Image (cartoon, rainbow, N blue to C red; front, side, top):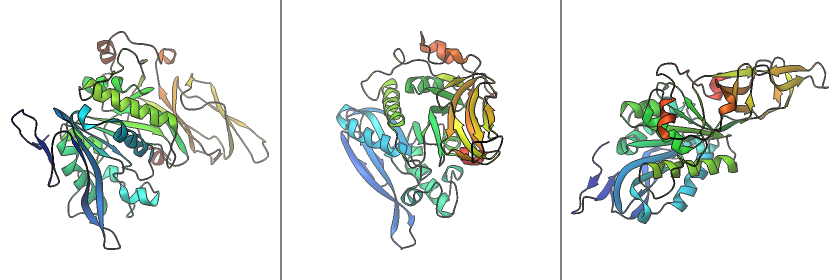
Length: 362
């Protein structure tokens, strides 16, 4: 992380960003120019910086890197209302809509159809996605020592609230445990993603997946808001319970599998995200238009359902259920005695399986 402050006699000075100098104990909303829209008017990256009265780390929370993933936007609005500069140690950078172009058009991608989360580190003179990625890198990632990026499932899908982390990092496991989402998934970094770029810059990141595109749901928003506050408490930025002794242990996985429709037709689900399942359990039945010739969809592994299709009409081969594989599903939700016990339970580095986004799987 670079030097972003002007020191005062007490060792805690103003936070410098995009030509702005924010004194301790203040918050400021910024519009950082990225490029120009087709209208010729500037397109800006909108940030709110909360610079605490006391020194501490710099952390960013970002949402809507895919423009239709708006659950994180609602979470950040709650953080804006809850966290004040007087109560904060360090600096919090909030970005409720990284992909402002897709956000305005209710679309996942940028107008040029590029995926912003495959465009890092970007370039100041590159494509629209490259310019936006470069701007976020320069003004946000390189200013911080920790990041939390908020995602949702693709359109017509739902994701159980879950935290995804790079494998082999006890520190990230510790932060994920403090977050307290129902599931922690260790997954390799994807080239061009924000997480991969941040890791290269030695900025650890948590990625939350929760809810569905273009919809708010209370469970995802509540878990996301509370989880972020627990992480901030755990690293000493706010005075609150970090949850490590009061929140049940999340399910832990580093492999997952998709269960696909055996035929085209109409799906009748009997299971949903959050359910514990065992190999061979009935998940759904797919029938024809008149309810005829039903074919069963069965769980392929023992585990917990972390995502499902919300649209009942399917084609043969459509991915309908996403199951995180667990060796002992019955233990999901157990309490932990110590954080050390949870960290030591990490899977060995290098065994994790890549997790595809839902639209990539399809």
